[in-house]
Length: 432
Image (tube, rainbow, N blue to C red; front, side, top):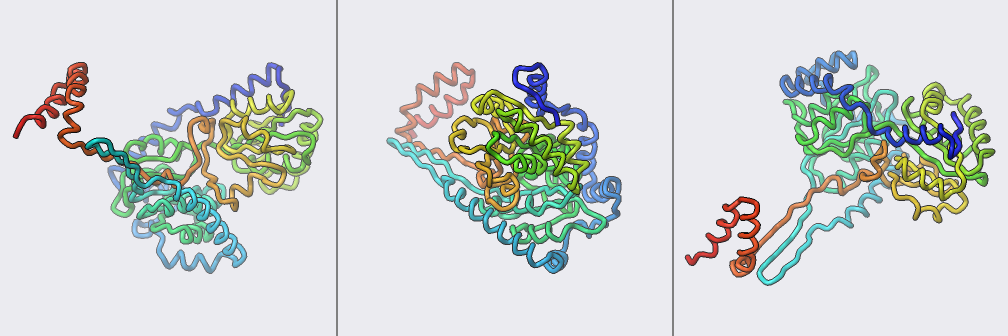
């Protein structure tokens, strides 16, 4: 893992590369993805079966695409009792947090003035699709994070898709879906799964919104179907920035960098510190911890290819770099973390103090772990109940109130060359 010092040429070059990490070649996968989307839209279930065989090397008949209720019940028996209790505890905490957020939603906003009534109402989406990755690992936590907010928002039907495995879908994923209130589960992954949710097939119902992370093909597919359906975000590889100083144990910092690097070879893990000696201690600790990690190869490649230890003058300067990076996860691993919060403008989630590792946020804390990546924390937010509702404006005028704006409408319509707009008002002003 490289060590770079503020002010040196390599430091600024690296930071610029990190800032531009969202500017991926969006056309790299587009031709292939468009072809699959088009085929699924045309051939429906037959295309789903075809691509499942091509990409997953599994021949699954159409009638077996949907997971049966009996399989979900069997999954409950396969999950160890202790982990089942952990899943239930996590579900309760996630539900509790998002239920609090749902109470903040304004269900009706009204305003009246002399014959005018203006109102805005919020209603939940009818049907939502959640995509749960299933390639390099099993992610029951993602099931809970995607489905529970939708349920708390009042979504009528939740449809889940996840790539099929030769040994079957992870029992923990099926149990998590059951705990979260998922209504239908399909063993479909990749671009074809996104296509099925976006366009609908005879077996898979069309949804109103697709949420959940996936690989670059899935991300490209989500981007291309946006407009046909809504999406949460175009997610990139996992990332973490840790701001720390010499008062913290290097072992804590190293462990948290590894916790993100082990996700994927393209994951981004960065330490920003004001002490080069501390940075070198962390690097040494990284090597020690990696030596006994099961996913050592993945984590090592991530740290060596994309990771860095950035040496800055002070913590104020560190916050400047944090805001330029706009990370998915930010750890303020310092003795007075709350004093730095005001300096954070862009981050998906902030973890404060030595005993709040990002890992607790992935599983048990309660706030959502589906977060903006690749710098999109500059304008995007964590997944939440507000992502599963839509707003509708209501407008009501009396005849007398409408007359007060007759000339204003006429002036606008004349300026914009839309005389029919003015006529629509004038017709109502004529005596009946």
